[in-house]
Each structure stands twice: as C-alpha cells, then as structure tokens.
Image 1 (cartoon, rainbow, N blue to C red):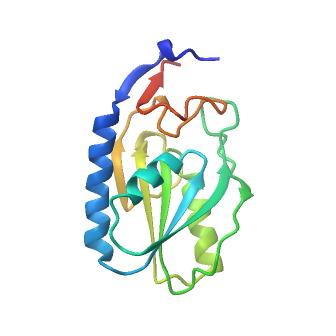
Image 2: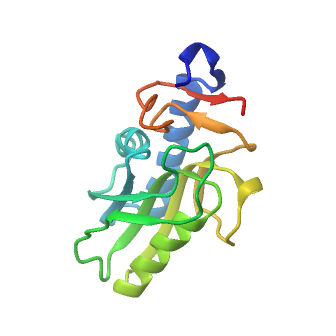
Length: 176
C-alpha cells in the first residue's frame, strides 16, 4: 500500500480546475446548443466528468461504462476488459468519450471501435484529462486533452492505485 506521504504533487486542485474550465469553453464553442452525449469511462473519469459537466452549457446526457486494463499493477496490461459497456441508442448523436488518462491507447481504441461498430453517430470525439503520449502503443490521439504528461504512475482526482486514492483533490505520482 502506498502512503499518501510518498506521493509527489504533479497538478494541484486549482491547476486542474482551471484546465477543466478551459476544456469546457472549447466544448461549448464546438457544440453550441446541440445535444451532447458524454460517455464516462468508470471509475477513474468520474471526477473529471462531474467537474467538466458543470462548465457545459449545451443539453447533455451522461452515460457510464466500465472498462479495465490495469488491475493492481503500475502499468496497463494492454488487454481491455469490458466490465459493463451498456449504452443507449447513439445513432445520429454527438458523442464525447470522457477518459481520465490515455497511455497505451488500447482502451481508447477499443471504445472508439466499439461505438463505431455499433452506432452511426453524428460525431464521435474523445476527451482525456491526461495524455501520456510517451507510452502510446496504438495510434490514437484525443480530440481534447488537459495535460500532456511524462511516464509516471499517477493517483488522485479519480486515478487510483488498487482502488485507493481516487478521492484526492490533486494528481500526484509515485516514483516506481
């Protein structure tokens, strides 16, 4: 078990909230008053989704799915486990996937491919708070992202280690 005292600060709460507000402005400019479906990848993205949605002015629906690729390790397994991927009819809808972090890209690609295979959306875009390009194994880039980060194992603001630390209001990292 990692102790909170072992964490090093990467982004404090104020920095995160400013970035989330900026992303909200971008999305408001992009979608105007069109209905937007937000697909939140649980559990890590829920804090980001909640804070981002407070800045959005368009009518929106929130949907929640559960995918997993980490387990209890510090690195992605590279295999995506679809725990619960129940979605409403997304045909002819503006869809924005909300993710906490993109690292290898496997989860993002899996979800984008799944939605494209099952629905004919009006638009399909991807928004991630964190983009760890250095670890990318699959060619995929988010349409919107908050911060580009180095190869660090992060916790806080929804990100966890073995289910713990999601509740921290900041993002910290562990030296591995």
